[in-house]
Image 1 (cartoon, rainbow, N blue to C red):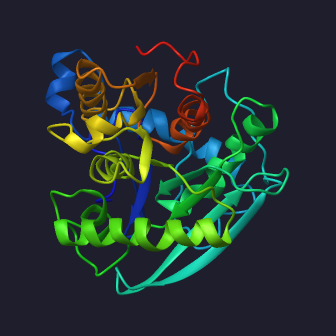
Image 2 (tube, rainbow, N blue to C red):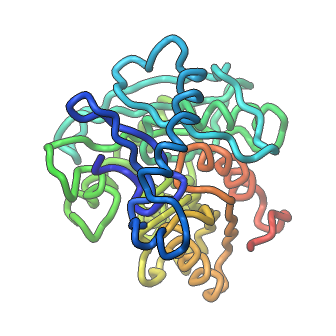
Image 3 (cartoon, rainbow, N blue to C red):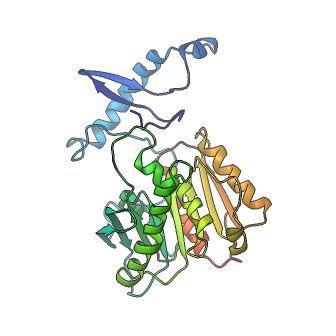
Length: 324
């Protein structure tokens, strides 16, 4: 339960404790707040919501929960104009285990290459690389339709362990303010080990690269390009909750391009992402900022990646979506 998105008004799920199903949502709103607004209590609200969630879960997981899962979140699609998706990408999805000198241990990487002619492709490093297959399901139809240039998606899995509540290993690697030595080691791993390997073994073009991510991974994508604009010339960051206080001189000189997006119902993440977009635009740097009417979940991030890559990989003079 510690990993739930704080104050995300779209998060509704349940968990079991001592055999009792306990509903969870609206963690920042109290019964007193709701009573003052003439609304039902939280318990009454949960009792109304849970039957609908159970029926959606039963329909989606009729054969049982996925292997290794004891809880799932079921999100109702809210956008009638959702991008096409495929259940199984035709492109190659490959797994590779690094025995990293920088991280002093093993780390998994998932690589997606879309179907098409052989040859080097521009590369995009995706934080939380465990999610590559989900992104590929939406990205592949967009590439095959000609809406997005072919791109190599290299997903670097986030760190796990040692067990601790906060800051966990993922946060230490993605947020420089929480563990700079570990953040630097992870960045060295990506730039000094993963990217050279992708160029020599996975068909990545020489560069420059795009850094991409969501939530803390989006914060990492921004921070990585600020520190290594010689490697990352563009950023696709969604729902970044922690952003830099200033633009580095190197990133300013390199004119790193940013595609930023957040949901209107994301407390904390939306203001932070928008703040970074405004800072970039005041500096006269290339930036697109988009919003969706929704919360903090994979559905929206997967919907945003094709548009982000299409804009970031287009020539700088090409038209793009309105910035606001």
